[in-house]
Length: 254
Image 1 (cartoon, helix red, strand yellow):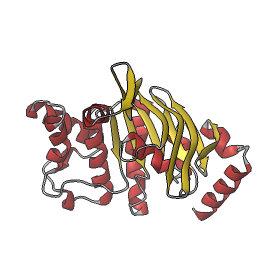
Image 2 (image 1 turned 135 degrees about the vertical axis):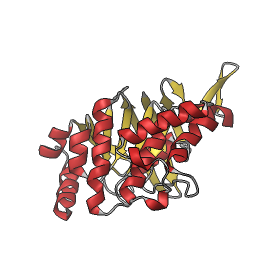
Image 3 (image 1 turned 120 degrees about the horizontal axis):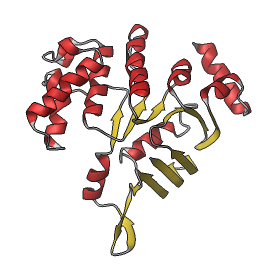
Image 4 (image 1 turned 90 degrees about the vertical axis):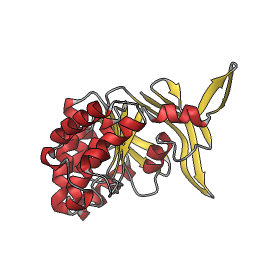
């Protein structure tokens, strides 16, 4: 579903991704772990077309993301191609980014109406179903300011799913929450992981959460994947010394 071929990205003199090769299968749930600055969030931002790679190619659902074919030649993607590709990808950020002047229902239904052309009645019916799915069935007419942080993040998850993406990206989605609110968001993501065939990439520092939800864990350091494997092996018997030291530091801090 997602493929990175020899991706390079630098910000000034700092190389963030260094000849990265990465494949994620359809329906696979992959957790990205590693120290800050190791390139994890940059991967998500590239998939959301917020950052352009300096070299290499990215494919989503078999189609090139940052390039396109024109008259038999590969050329940089134009805005129309990028808009089409964005419909395949949803992302939930650290911050909720809800529209404060809209009700919860409109926050979820508006983009499917405007971007996908779904009739309002159908979009609102689906929004209500998604609110029920994330445990907020009674909050459709609330404004974001009337919700807790955990509830707002659950609305943000429902809003992203409403666009029916093939790939969902989650960037430290509980890092802005108070500790007592983290569990409710994790529970929603666990349900999504087990009940849907959606492909998911999750950047997280919550190692127990990564263990619970991921099919595969990728350890990043200095723009490279230095270790990859099922959660049980990565967290119980890591092979790379850098992985061992990182996990030790993270687990000691929690």
